Amino acid sequence: MRAVLEEKLSRFEELEQLLMDPDVQANSSRIAAVAREHGSLAKLATKYRRFKDLNEQIRDAVEMIEGNDPELRELAEAEVGDLRTERERFWEDLLDMTIGGEEANRARCIMEIRAGTGGDEAALFARDLYDMYRRYAESKGWKIEVMGANPTDMGGFKEISIAVEGEGVFRELQFESGGHRVQRVPETEAKGRIHTSAATVAVMAEPEDVEIEISPEDYRTDKFHASGPGGQHVNKTESAIRLTHYDSGIVVQCQDEKSQHKNLAKALRVLKTRLYERRKEEEQKKRSDERRSKIGSGDRSQRIRTYNFPENRLTDHRIGLTLYKLDTILQGNVAPVIDALLEYERQEQRTAFGTIE
Image 1: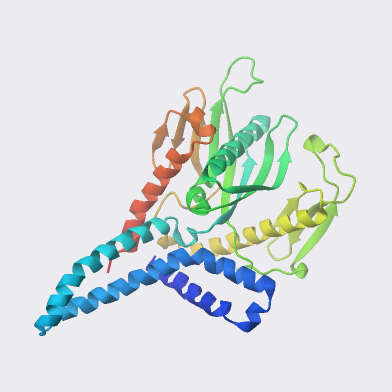
Image 2: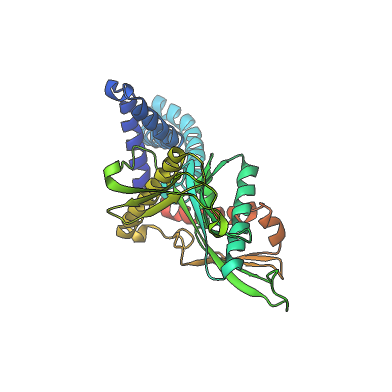
């Protein structure tokens, strides 16, 4: 984790130089992207820089205390206690800010929810998950934007992709990635039997423009007519967009906007995010032993949680958490679950950080 903090500080200082570069200042889109990335790193980088300064000051004070000059020793002894108290406060702040690793402080992420096994019931469950996260985001004052959706005739979603923006979004939502299982009696079940169905959630940090650069030559663009649930034709113009990235084979489709340009802009955001996520996964494989926490893998195939309607129970299998208030959680009160996951990761982070020196 120290290595990650050093990288972030180094990148922040590099961006500080770029902001003063006349060539960058002359390019409006470039300066905007650099300024945005600089702003996203500022809080963590400046805090870590101050933490390092405090460590240096404490080392100097200790040398004075161990030295032969009584006047300097007296001054250092009076100062070192306050320095250590301040360093401890910055240490705790850094622990909190780095929960979830190097992407912890991203202010934008993209969440994809897909219906799994269970047919229409799985699609309805995907809709329930979307509504749950939407309400939670609204309670936090975060901005939500639907990037693409594939609705069903019964009001569910085969899949839906949303962008979420606001302070702490990725830090709080990242542990929602994985398989979600629901146990309940479907409305169409005449005999009252409990059915089990599933949905998967993927939460991906959205990169800054300067982190992922792609050109039109890197992907194929297909334009087609947008359609509604069940294939209903809802648009007579070719406003829908499908992008196919040549190297990775990633396919992104957006059709929710009436404007072709808006759909293209959304599709590019999702494509960049998926490419960034893939690159991140490849890097994590190279240093897989660095992530000790069992809650941070983000693997969609991993079943992370069960929603049991008859018992009004939610169970998160990764940390052994069980809450008997599923009804309020689905209404957007996800904080007890998210807080428990963050606290678990906080304890893991203490171990990963090593000593305070």
